Length: 74
Image 1: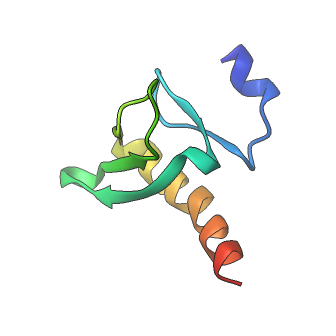
Image 2 (image 1 turned 30 degrees about the horizontal axis):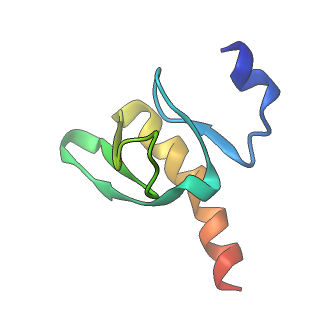
Image 3 (image 1 turned 45 degrees about the vertical axis):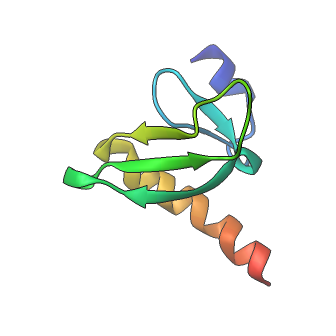
């Protein structure tokens, strides 16, 4: 919680209790059952390739992640 408060929210998102990721590490996401989503992580020796996000955080993640997609496509 302390670390999260010092990170710029435009670039970092807390996926769950274990992971706070920078936008550049996220390749995309896929939908799961019951509103959950799987975050597809760019290959890294230190992170799993898929991180699950609860349905409670899924909507906030999608809203946070979408602006980056439109920025990249412009």
